[in-house]
Image (cartoon, rainbow, N blue to C red; front, side, top):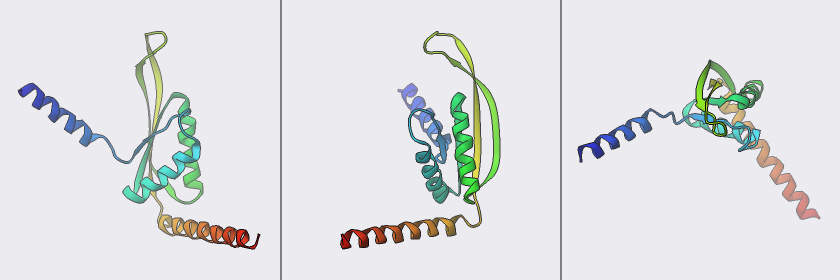
Length: 135
């Protein structure tokens, strides 16, 4: 019984140490702007977001970070690169994979820009509705 209790405590510790504001990006699973919009939401909730990727997905993470920075929504706080060892599923051997983690924080204008974007979308929707009513 003690072993079960210790295992549960270990699970609780690992869940507590897992970051809630981390996005693990994949090249194949979701489109680019899914991750851009998710990062915006995470920054609204947590004031910062950590983008993480392995191998070929690193270019996608860099692109996401650059889109957010160029739109004046984010600033770089930290960039960390490393190499990790993984087991190749096809060949069953150890392979080295590049890993990147980019920590982005909100800019001072983040909230104003997000509000302006929301207002623009509402205006566009209203204009579309007016056009549909005319037709």
